[in-house]
Length: 61
Image (tube, rainbow, N blue to C red; front, top):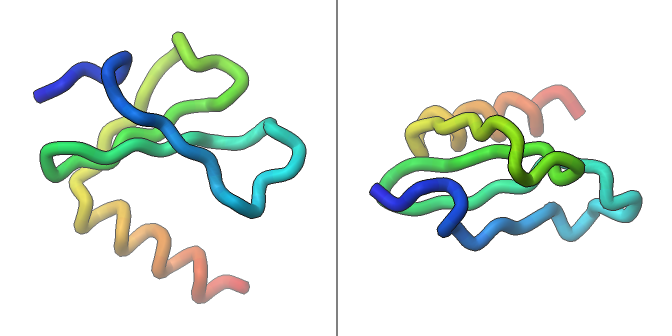
């Protein structure tokens, strides 16, 4: 698998302050990091688990 430093990171189109999380996906995994600390820790989730998480968040709004 490709390491987190070699991923193409993106922010939400709704992010205006620049202080948010960034995500990248590759090889069946979603990577999440703090945009203010790009060299910091990276969380890794299976795509299905991340999709479920996002759907749960949508249900809260």
